[in-house]
Image (cartoon, rainbow, N blue to C red; front, side, top):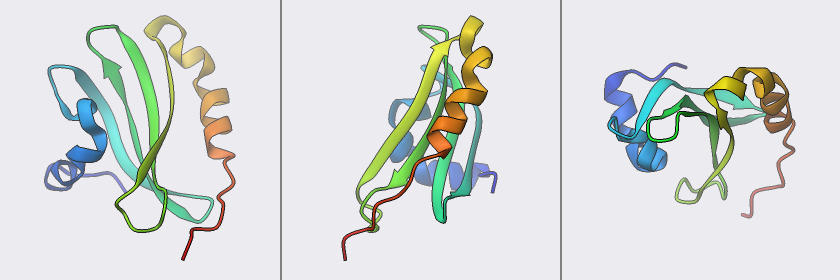
Length: 100
């Protein structure tokens, strides 16, 4: 699900500095199912370092109050060379059971 502007602002605390347009240019933000869990996916570029970044954010404990991030970042010149392998590695995660 691609996030629209009104939805995007509701997750700005999760994105942290990536939500600041003077620091990060967002290429896409969307949700997807990853091994039966919904995750938030963000992709874009840091303006100060010219690094591209692919991140997924996970509800770590099932409450929505503990969010963990897994990411891949690389210089723009190398980013796409390794993106497929990095995203496959990230997407191979196996979830532990959420504490009840």
